Length: 75
Image (cartoon, rainbow, N blue to C red; front, side, top):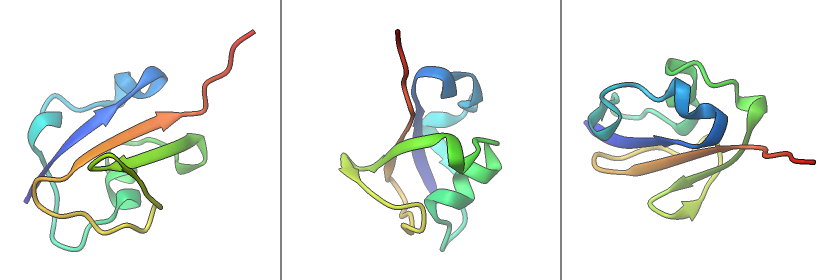
């Protein structure tokens, strides 16, 4: 199974080269993928799966598009 993984802002450096066809195992969740690409869950502000906000325990399916956003600060 493969997903599209989109890592935004400061997470862009964590996005793997194969992010347009990132391999996952059946039953993998958002948190499993974050762990694999070494993005700390506590730094994640919002996750979208197929354009819909979701939780870290959301199970992923073949072809899903996952977007990961950090908390963004400014000043």
